[in-house]
Image 1 (cartoon, rainbow, N blue to C red):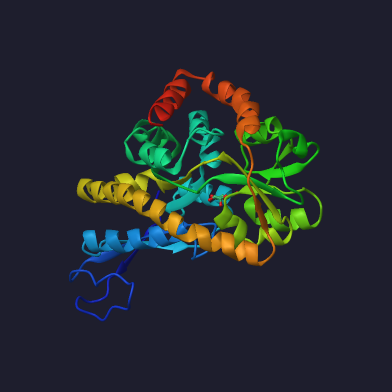
Image 2: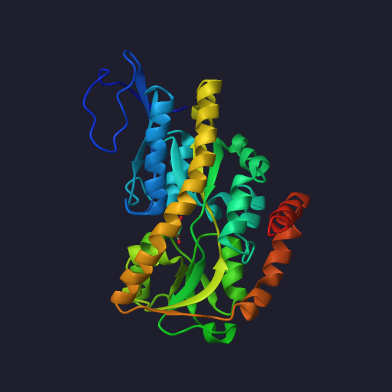
Length: 331
Ligand code: GCU
């Protein structure tokens, strides 16, 4: 069951503040779709989603708006994901690794070195190559609406990491999935799964030696304060997934469903652009606070990760076919 709130929309022709969508047509009831987000209002995904909310409101004549709760206000990604499945909230942005726990084929989207470049990833996310896997989760009460980029993840700790040997004995926090743990182990360290919100304190207290993430999250969460060396291993371009309660989606008119799907594609592209625009600023913020960004020869890490790739792609025909399709879009 879905618990989306339906409220009377403001009367037509009312004043609108900058950045706020126009008032709906008269007598239209606005249904609010609650969306959980674990990062800040400055994050490119938040910016893209909030533009998308305005566009959806306009396109449906005020019938729908998406209300984003940032900063883990609705809980960690894992909690938010359960709330979407139960219909307590309608949408959430969650890391691909969380969905991988429901359909193991999703692991393919988050395999180390699966994408050669941002352009390659954009092609995969917008070409329709993922439509089948996105629809595969409906029996679990959620639909995957879009894959948003989250840049390229790299290792950060208390020293530069140039080779797998440098990671020996280093406990590095990873997202909560078997693939992420196996990947970090293969890279030479000790993969330690944990929710994002706990990482800063865990590094500070010496429970772990560091983490792995993109520059924007690294800067946003001030992880540079406790792990000032950011080494460009670029091992993981794992997407975040916009998930939606399936009953809520199917409860919308065919036309509104299509509108939302089209907007999800459009704002997938827009988020790539916003990511690009925000990247330099994040690096600068971290550098000004003393962080060092270190270039790394990725070849030894790539080689070390090959068994992880083989292990996931050998698990099912679907996984193998999807991996081949992703790779075929590389050029
Ligand atoms: C990135 C990603 C998030 C994820 C986080 C993490 O910031 O965008 O979805 O939660 O990494 O490491 O947990």
